[in-house]
Length: 420
Image (cartoon, rainbow, N blue to C red; front, top):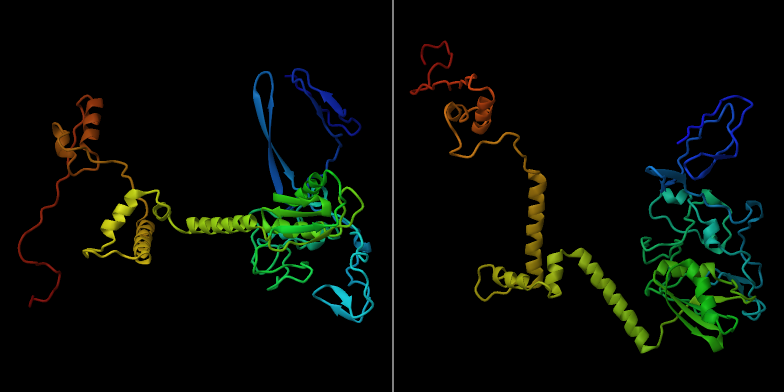
């Protein structure tokens, strides 16, 4: 390996491409200056990347720490305006977010295309909300209209399986209602976990299913897609409910591969018996998984019938000494839970058992003077015998005698009173 030395002068700079003989690689270095500025200390999140390079002689492993990318503003803050829609009637309906009571227009003809669209690969990044657990997602980021970037108080990324929220609100922090709107728009209902979106006004083509899957899989993992090609309608079901909420806002009034304006709503209950059976099975699996996490493994094995020995033990111990008595499930589980908690508390209070550094030798393993010295001394008999062997027998061991105790009445309290 050839060593390259850099001369630190004010006029000399390092070449942009420097080849090191023997390494077989080309490294690019920035130009060196006479007074390099020290790196600025920031509290931005960072990620670690492990890079392994193999040379002819040895294997070098480097850990490169790079900062996470901050969220970029999607629109110019000076041009962003958060205003209600223009008045087209006499009463503003906050539920539907539109005016009513005036001249009515065709709701399909009045739809306009969305002014922007979110690009997750380009716009996502860390914000102030990443430092606060339980933060909600940015609604304007989903629509591609957030002007704040990394200064935003909401998350600028896609929801994941670990992002769980109260059933009364959606992933954006908006309150749900007890029932859906008449047009199945809005936030949704807290009485039903809806993961399916209705997508209407799709341009009819032969590959409509592939187009819908390609555009909607940007917002999360898709469980199922059903397409009605003749009607230009698709039903997209996501694995996570938060991803369906994000996709509904992200694809509202958007276009696919043509100039159509999509109508994205919440899907109603599927009347297909197979779909209802599948949804009921999924809910049962979620409830069973919650029970598995709440109960100990022994209880779960007994309930599911995977541990026959546990049933025998319960049949014997569940009678509590009463012939013919079979304890109910709640009594048995309460007794087992109390036993587990008592064992855990005892372990916490007692602490781990301390191991002795010098232990006594087993009985019968003594010889000569070592037997007398190891009975009451610090060192064991085997240790004294080993020391005697190393010293060649020239070392003598003495045992301190215990002070003799006088038997008889308790006297000598040190009192000067002769009456004692």
